[in-house]
Length: 448
Ligand code: ACO
Image (cartoon, rainbow, N blue to C red; front, top):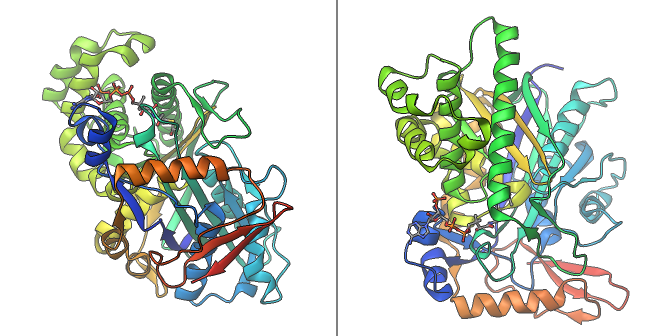
């Protein structure tokens, strides 16, 4: 099969959010810590009527409808998520309700889990399937769905929630350059969820930042080596139009891109001009470990990278800044932001994506864009996702109300025998919502 990749996308995030500026004041953090320090504007969250299953039901149903896809035409469905609702029954099986109704139960695939990386694993599974001898000519469908919530404390403002659905097949407008791909996988305890009766992770924030940057460096080095073997010339940040990062919070994205510029400097790549060389020269002899600790290097490389950042990264940051960390959906929400902002100017461009899941698993990979053909065109994807409208029609909650909802959700997590308020007044038409968890922990949903 030729030009296998993403044919169509849909994104869903809750219509409920809190401004970071408001949360900052409520938490007693210094002014600007969440907005400038973390680089976040707003945070989306699920209320008691929404969860990862309802969000993914909404995203999948909407994608099938808006691109007029017959559910019988889906042959593989893969879900990436780190939000555990059931230790055995996959989220994929909940989504089968949509397909069973149409008489299609012949669909391979289950859930993939490793922190924020599961969506990328699911995506690769689908792309590999379409490229393989097992492919039966039907579409692959990938769903990334997560509700990121943290206990009260410094990590709380880095929550978020969303579901993204992506249709996979040949002749796509977003084509995988599967040879330009590099991974870094290791055993670290930076962020994990060993407490099975709580939705909150155990997180070493500082360590997770360093692990992320180390994985980024490793992936970039390997990707550059592979590219050079393949193309016979050096790779640098000048060779891709855009860089899309897994985005726990925007400041880390700024630091990550700066890190790539520093890598280019160390490799003597063509993207680095004389001014940049002079600025970074004092750091050329730092050891790897020292380089992660050096605040001066961080500042210098951010300064050098700034013009490139504005051009190659800034257009990818809208949804992650507005919704927060969406875990598995975060990278693809950043990519969706790029399609939203630049859809008419992307044909022929290469985009590099970096996926990171704590624990840790990471891959950097490349896609090549073309306008495609309706309904699978970049402009149609942007118009279906309708990002501006979705962001605009959200409802801002007070910190008091937000905290109250978090407390209620703590009690509801893993609980049985309750009905929700069924209050769907804030949800858009067509949104799924949770109505009940019965005495046998079975979950029930309705559609507005
Ligand atoms: N005005 C402007 N900037 C400020 C202010 C202020 N008033 N106060 C602090 N800052 C800056 C800090 O200097 C820092 O920026 P810097 O790193 O460029 O120096 C930034 O704001 C954050 O401040 P910290 O003191 O470092 O924040 P803290 O340690 O309290 O928490 C953290 C930040 C660790 C990211 C926390 O939110 C967390 O643990 N989040 C979850 C973990 C995470 O997302 N890790 C990322 C990879 S793994 C994953 O995806 C889950």
